[in-house]
Length: 172
Image (cartoon, rainbow, N blue to C red; front, top):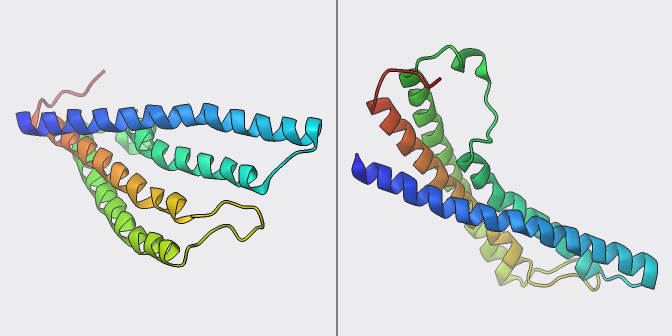
């Protein structure tokens, strides 16, 4: 049980650090959008690459932030039945659902690898003139983000299993 607790704490700590970095990318996005707007309207300057960079930063923030949302308990639940369950029942539901999430996340990560390899092999870039090249870099975030989500789901599953093995009392 100690090893399970250490795994859960370590994995959650890694996800927390990644999530906090993803949160700071929100500031980078705001500054980038502000620069693009001010440059366009005050100096009649704008590039397709900087506009594409906006959605690249937003995509990375969202993908990396989804595991942080799970880490912080920000997932959406339907509490109609969940609220009436005992602590052991909720722990069982959490363990099964987090295990399922981990498996699906790992499947998506694995399937995305071919997607990244394809983009890399053809040298995929922006279809727009002046756009960003090397689109495979953005696509490479997909398997990484889903692997991190699987890690957090496994950590949450471990916490639920530890809770399941613990007391019957429901938290207040």
